[in-house]
Image 1: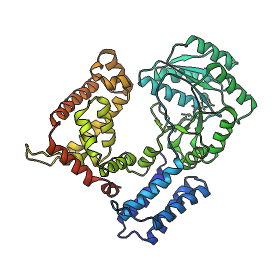
Image 2: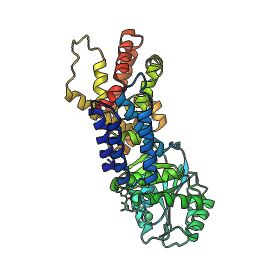
Image 3: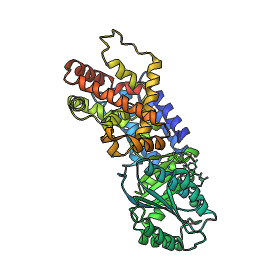
Image 4: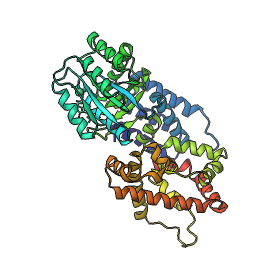
Length: 451
Ligand SMILES: Nc1nc2c(ncn2[C@@H]2O[C@H](COP(=O)(O)OP(=O)(O)OP(=O)(O)O)[C@@H](O)[C@H]2O)c(=O)[nH]1
Ligand SMILES: [Mg+2]
């Protein structure tokens, strides 16, 4: 878990809200103080911290509790919304062929992140080459070569060449038709005119779709200053914020970078090549607060209230049901407790039992996690056309996910079973209305109780 101590303090505050008999001014004051302490400890800027907590306090005391909520959920919701404001909106990022330049100062994690990105694209079936254009650091060539072979990407470099422009020109020529070209560039101690010029020259030669600034989160708020300086000098398209796993100051880094308007695209959560995530503020915050995918559930709840539920469930029943649909549903179900509730919502009439023992639920949840990892290694085409998954596709997916081909086959078998089940359920009004009722009663109040 990244940002451990911030997460713990905020979760404790939410727990306190859930346990309190009464949501009154005194509780709000206490919560606001705890939030202030937690945010400042995570190196969030003082005035930003005050802005967040003042907003929470004012809204909690002034806003009437909506009819479909209660004082506890209302307060939790306000806290969630105010924290989300500082994380900003996600920048959309689509996987497609691209040239990506990684830039940044010494030791921020450029080379490691280049490898992580390569692995990410490879998993989705792209042809990827890593280009060694760091001519500053001793052994940069060998390090990137080693990273390339560990993730299974192609590698290009010219040993002993001190002109990074030459290297990039040769690489762009040789790998013209490749899907994804990732360029690891030189760092410096500080951003200066020679670094700026080198980056701009390489960009001129390679015409990258993305210029991603790699920033070490452990510098806390300072990350904002660096992001601004780089953005002013070379126009970055996004930030890869690394080492969020190993720092207490991540909150400061996140909020300060977002405040500059430079979007955080990825976060690094460890030294291993799989330790990166696409940064989605809402999802990140929900996980930090231990709410599962709060945003998705909230919007599901909202739709239910607006009478949309029928369409949603029916769409699933009536429309196509590929791995893509299954993934989306599982994505929302990937939360302890929700699984059980869904199980509970299904009538087990025939067998005469509604009790599913915990072990079975535990097994289902761990299977779900495994299946999600496997599906993350599939391309969009494969998700939409599961029947095409065989032979070399099957092997690539297994390799990419770290599981075996029989695991992938097991997933496909389960998918077909579920697909048949969905088909059989179609048109069964009674089950439809039961499912909807369960959703309705289960959200969003239960969410709070599970914190
Ligand atoms: N814990 C953790 N360590 C990371 C992460 N990303 C990178 N590192 C470590 O940070 C150190 C520096 O990473 P590099 O990728 O070599 O950084 P760089 O920017 O290429 O450095 P130079 O080439 O020297 O400028 C290495 O020890 C990495 O393992 C991360 O997300 N989490
Ligand atoms: Mg490097």
